[in-house]
Image (cartoon, rainbow, N blue to C red):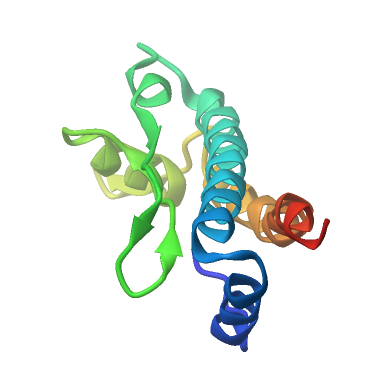
Length: 132
């Protein structure tokens, strides 16, 4: 999932020049972490529809703030092969010539749609601290 905002670099540079790099970094990181926690809960809620052993639900993790080309947090599955099972539950599969629709089919797409609608307002709310 990816959301793109144009002009973000200019906005962040203006904020850093007015308030200082350290304060701006702290506030941006805090907003990213809080949004990441909320995304984590949304994904856990989506995969809970096909809980069997609970391992897929328990291995949903959110990374720390990363600054590759831009600041971001990632939500996904921890070490192991759970993503393969999630893929089968999300998209269905063919078994013995018949297409199987698991009970969790399409749940993660719903979670992605929900995250896309709440991520930007949540980040804006977190960044309002810089305007004070």
